[in-house]
Image 1 (cartoon, chains in turn blue, red):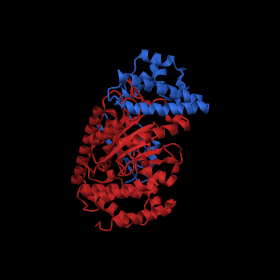
Image 2 (cartoon, chains in turn blue, brown):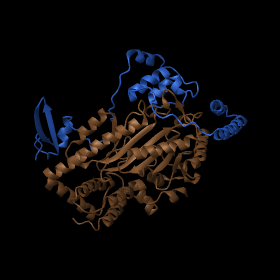
Image 3 (tube, rainbow over the protein chains, first blue to last red):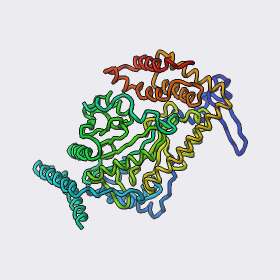
Image 4 (cartoon, rainbow over the protein chains, first blue to last red):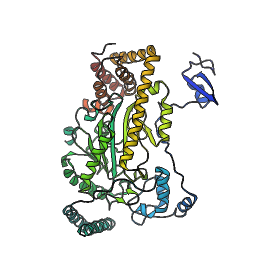
Length: 171
Length: 351
């Protein structure tokens, strides 16, 4: 069958048009389909168009999000603008540093902003924790010796959080 | 070398012994996890990345991996790296030669842990056929075993923290790799994709995010990872995928009833080409193989076995072919070798 638009090329696409309840079918070629913008080439295109159901953040939430757009994470130095550009956060602390905006972003992506699932089995044996602490303290000493102060600061934070856990386990 | 010891033949999850294996190739569950005290991978220095690798390897023994099962990315050339991508063990983003990155993998390749890709850890379990609950339970247990040895970044409010906020919360992504030729042939696929989107599912290509759909194989997964429990996510995707499987079966039966001659013609022509072609590109193989798979499902063809089609789907990919030949091969020569491999497996197929 020839294309019903140009009447030259072979028709390769069946286009079904539905207006109200009126259904009409036309047979067209790829070229004309492209010209008319009628191609939805589902099988050959990469699928990136995820269509989630978005929950809309309130105006107030939006304002909050706008406010702190020059916020910077004190821990890793990532700016909120960097995050907006790349879509990636820099470290765990970014979630706190950009807290007001993150809640809005999460609601847009997931429709929710609070976790409902699993809580880590942080019942790591205290022995394992102690062993891990020893390793971390050793690494910390090495970092101080080699003057890698930024890394040392990170390690100190980790050590503090592990020590807190150990104390909690002891209670 | 670790690679040769572990990566052999066809992954266990490619054996079509699971539920609905003619339609659902595999079911996968993965968890994104990070370790507190380290910046996320894209912001971390090499020293930090090396420490993460050490920490994960140390923890791996207690989690059922032996420490020698870590395949280091930097030791791989492009061909070996492509093989891992083709086996769905690493994502196409993890390029060859990157330092302090890699994958922990157990023989059979049903369980693996990707280290320092987008997140510090990505725990993954893949099962044959339609079995999302099984995949979830396995990855859940694997997660518990690691959590006893390594602390994971977690906040009461947002759950497990991840580099990209699209994974935060449960960190869980479950997906099925599903073959839907009848929905494509009957032009129902567009509607299916739109309605999948409306109920919060993402539809992607064969290698996941950003990849193309080849051979009518789609990856269907949850979009949101926050705000629902893991069980709810698993059950929702499982239920939706179950309905899609039913649509596909119905569409296939309808085609057989209402368009028997064109359908049978398509199946036999495709089998004929695979049985006799002297050159085949990967895309051609995937497309003809799709029609043959549908033919086997509808008993239009008695052979080849689904297992043979699955094996070929793994083995005729460019990385695998070059690994087998032990050298880089130009696409044209690959097409010749691919056609040979396919003809061999189609010898007893009668068309």
